[in-house]
Length: 315
Image (cartoon, rainbow, N blue to C red; front, side, top):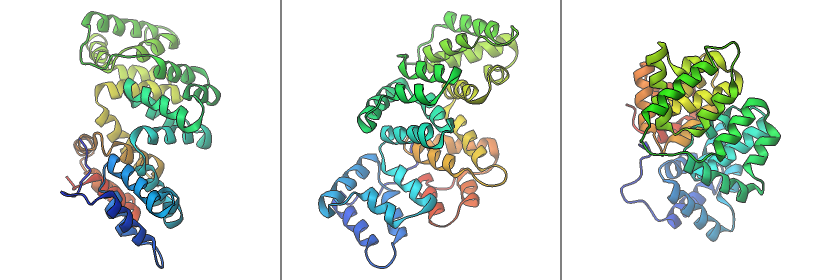
């Protein structure tokens, strides 16, 4: 469920392009006008606006935005211009190559569906001229590398059907590979987590809890650490309840001193058109504060205005 609020009768992409051009002209940029247009257009409309802008003014809208905006607002708006797969590709490439912190790449890959990953791989190659698998091989190592490569290349079922017998067996196998033995059999975890569907893993979690008295998530936390642990946790939590998982990621980004704006921008921008209504509901339920209020107190100025426009009404 998206939180994006679109005008009842959206202007034509050409009108939007003209309004943006006007907002850029003159002394300083009319940032409020830019936010007002872009934060209320869906993925398809944004693509048409960019096309019209280039056709009319012989300039990429993204390039113009780079020269007109700055800081966190610029980062958020530029990321928002993309369609979902292209945005994921940008986030992963930046995480693997520029930041060298693999958290964003791990989170994005391990929270997407098999069909989303299929599309992402094709787009990554056409956009950057290199295979995503190759980038992962070069920029990661160890168990994280193994799970990411297997996760993006294994076809998984996406439906709700679950073979209860196999799910129960998987729960036992994971217990034996982890908590029951000294050390961890990472290979088994990688195999089950990358080959099973989301619905199946949710059933495995449920059986695990019934049989061993605590969650599979807790077992994963005890058995795996670092980004490999993050990959396993992301897979298992997104199998159970992706909205709850992203609510927690947002909470952590704003907790304590300072705000992790990269995470805040990444999650809000990439989930707005997917399940942000659910994420907001989970956030309020768990943290007794609305996500809008939390974002309002952690951000300021036009950057705050843009994020709040994407989040929709405060409830």
